Image 1 (tube, rainbow over the protein chains, first blue to last red):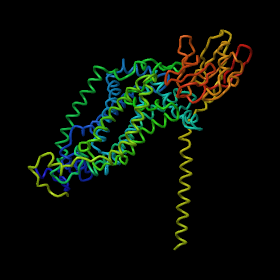
Image 2 (image 1 turned 60 degrees about the vertical axis):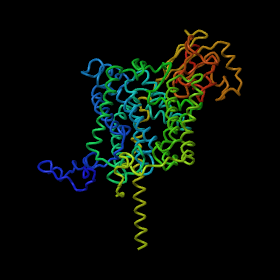
Image 3 (image 1 turned 90 degrees about the vertical axis):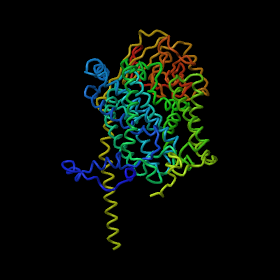
Length: 420
Length: 173
């Protein structure tokens, strides 16, 4: 077993046709070194480390179903709504493919949020993985744009008014705002020309997501995965080969993921959607209550918390921009919240705060919801700007274990070898 | 030697400048293609017959793809609009600047916050705290002159260009 843990740098020798290809295009060795027996992975990874592979699976599902749906979709103001209804009623298995695509977007965001909270809890964004974190945030931003443009395509009432409200955010820009909005629309109002370009972007941006995801994994493979203890890998005794140990563990996650997705698709396909989106778009009537999809509700709540148009837009943009600075706002040298008694509590307060923002975003901006939304928005920024640096300074972390292997295996194998 | 280097620097800078300008020129068609196209710009104006509108009634017409609110205001509404205290107005404008004829208020029915259509055209609609229009999306209240009074919208409802062709016909645009 010991040699299994040993990172081998000698290439795997293959014979026959496979060997002929491998000599010219070493794809088997690439897989072996990146997700195979030659990729040492911290042996203590828990199930919170499943969400990267699940995000990749969700992206694959969205691309495959999306390419198929686009074969039947008509991207014009006159034809869009009817073509989606045709997909639902007439196209063979169209209902299934569309429900998988729509609910797949929801579970994709759920997976990404859990992936991000994993980073917050275990400090995965810290030195030397800041760029892994940045690339992930770029993917997250591209996902938001992709999801939003996709939500507009069915051209129902929610589609139309979501497009109106969100493109109008650009009008908050001083002086040139109106020109920019008309540039986005290609018209003096939201209409067919906006729908056409959103269709184009919705198809193109996932290609960019795939590209950034590859760079995200490239950066990850340089310093490899963080782990629940947040301490460095000190030698081969701290790792296990990615295959078969973590491929198997990832597959368990895949099973759970597919159960959740199938549960939504077959038992509650419209639970996460808005009934108003089955009403064709009407430019002369705004629905009484416009809400985005659940995964954007916290950002929507932040937008509405500031009683000023430009201020609201800045706050919403800032709520994402600030995530880029988190590796430096968090002043603690200790990564994992497991050894950070004070930070651990603030982590859970932050989780609760984002959930409150989600609830506020789903409710009409009246009465107490306004003040709750403002307090929760304040706390969101307070967490990053004040709590993260200050806790890092004042907290005394618990003692860190000597190594991953002593922590996992007890002292039986305490003869830890020196680091490579 | 120095002469060669300065010649080389000149070539670098000249090439870089040429590539930058060329890149900018090549990018402009790709950016400008998204602006409203010629057929969109060649918009017809809309004529509206006001005769059927009794006092206190409103009608919504479509112009440039957007709703235009036309309201035949009551004497009470006109008085309220004219009596507004300038200090209460976020985007100050006297009522006289917003109407050509006090009884006819004509404005683009698009909330200046994020573009929703405010309620208030029907008698049964919520009209907000100033008895004018109320945007349900983010809670902006407009008065009987379509001026913003409360909520996140930064400006008054926009007034389109229009002319009265005769006593009961108005041309918008």
